[in-house]
Amino acid sequence: MIYSDKIFGIFFFFQICIGLMGNSLLFILYMYIFLILPHKKKPTDMILAHLTFANTMSLVCRGVPNILLSFGISPEMGDIGCKAVLYIQRVTRSISLYTTSLQSIFQAVTITMSNSKWVWLKIKISTFIQPSLLFSWIINMVIYSEIILRNVANRNITDARSGYYAAYCKTEAPHYHIVTTFLSTIFTRDLFLLSLMTCSSIYMVNILFRHLKTAQHVRSITQSSQGSPEIKATKLILMLVSCFVFFYWINAFLTVYLFTVGKNSWQLESFGNYIASCYPSICPFLLIKNENRISRINYIKTRTRIFSF
Image: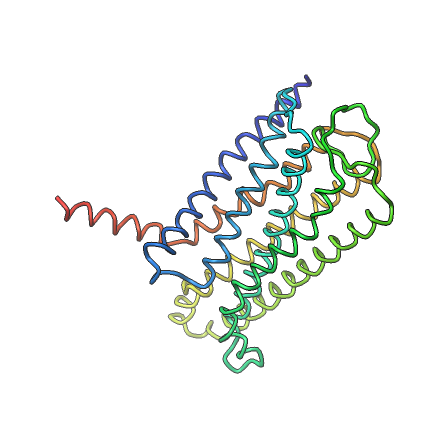
């Protein structure tokens, strides 16, 4: 086994541990709020709960096989395991893309000026969150049903690459028209969601710039605007979007390169998987940094414990 493979395995291991810790903490927080403290629930909590769940599943299904392979352990998944792992990888990655886009749109609408023509959407957008999330799960599960039909376990790693290929999974007898249609659908969907992210981000930056420019003559207003929850939430979404877009395009270029070259490259494949897992690992810590309810819940628990004695 090559020394660099072990290095990849170590990086994957720490990445998964850190990412799972952050996403699990946030998911438990949202479940605690939904069940125990519903009066503290925010409209965006539903979006972020789906995001943390999708990130967790993506990290597990992408990271664990790569860790095993990096240390020379070939996971005996069989056809069912291969289909399940690859299917969950793709669906959860798409849910992560969709929820990040939805979050950016929601925040853009939230900070819309009262005299804007989109102010009517500001009132009704909260009612669209649950149906849109349900729709995203259904549509992505349908789109990636192609993986269940066309992919099988890779029992011979010396096979020539054809279509999708990994050390544990490969495409069986891909048809050109089917592959073209499938990839075109994925690319169109991703480009549409990334465009929505970009447009909403530009819109939020424009509103922030105008808001701060208007308030810059009054020092007290400027200080309060910089520390307001709306401004903090907007800056957070802009960081999330920037982070997602950055890692998405790096991974996309690697994927296209590996697919077109038609040559097995375990190092590049591992690097692409690592890049794809960067956003799910970093995302929860950006959210935690902006989540002041964690300290409040701990404070309430501490006071309750003190008064119970």
